[in-house]
Amino acid sequence: METRPVTSESEPTSLPTPVDQVGEKQVQHVLAAAERIFVSLTGYTGFDRDLSQEILAGVLKSVSAEQQHAYVRQLEAFAEAGREPAEAHARALRPVASDL
Image (cartoon, rainbow, N blue to C red; front, side):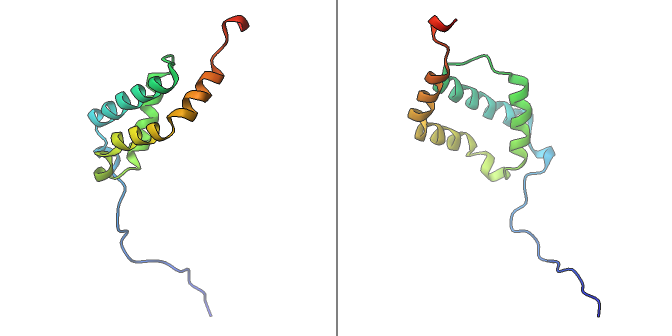
């Protein structure tokens, strides 16, 4: 008797956003918000914007089109909820003038 692999023929309930639906405008919108949030928490502006853009384009490909519209608000809420610990970690990582 041959054992056949178990497969599902049902359709997924929600498909990820196709790559071509993540437009440059959406990436730039979320990137601007992410940079603003990052700088407000850390005070650091020396990040690699091209790398951030590349990573964010990949992240947005895994977020449904419906969720992309609320993504900035979710980032802001996440940052605000973790503001105190994030700022404390950023202060601890900053070089002290006497250490330079």
